[in-house]
Image 1: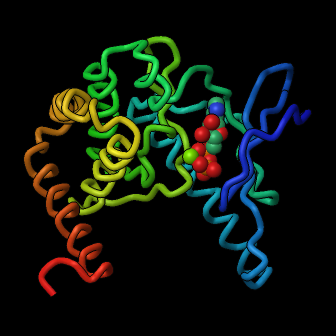
Image 2: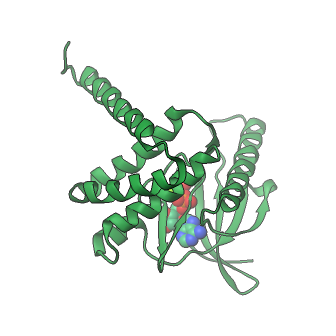
Length: 217
Ligand SMILES: Nc1ncnc2c1ncn2[C@@H]1O[C@H](COP(=O)(O)OP(=O)(O)O)[C@@H](O)[C@H]1O
Ligand SMILES: [Mg+2]
């Protein structure tokens, strides 16, 4: 395995582009947290690496496109996976290479498919979605978990919506129209989930107002 370059360095992990058996791939390696007890730190990193790889496999079995896992090295908290070419959904919405509604529909379909299996992505923002030709791929399962709580489904949708709001406020309506259709095709539960999303947003607003001293204080 040969490392080609470092792509990004987040709080939890470092991402490298690498070559394995002549194939372009990604190495995602969780970083040690110096503020944690070293033994506990290794244990946590191992568990989280295992969890991330497991949920990627379950997602693939559910029929959601995710990078193929090439290898998992629990001693080094590392996952080797297929490199997915193409723009992120954030970039695709900027460059208008596909109608926003169609993009939203694909994201909603995969979100619904994950949720109907009790899989929560945990960080469904427009940078963790890659368009490879006409196919959507979901990446970054670092915060994913199992749950059938409506609250957790709602948070996934809320995170996606918030990432649209910060960069593409003008496209929200079209993207979410598609999203709701895609989601509904998979689960028939959109109305309940959307109610929860609105509740989560009301709560967020309330907390922000309390913090800034605004609102009904
Ligand atoms: N399988 C992949 N194919 C192509 N690019 C990837 C892949 N995995 C990660 N990346 C790139 O690395 C970045 C960070 O990876 P990600 O898994 O989202 O980690 P983080 O937890 O640091 O956000 C992504 O935004 C993307 O640009
Ligand atoms: Mg990410």
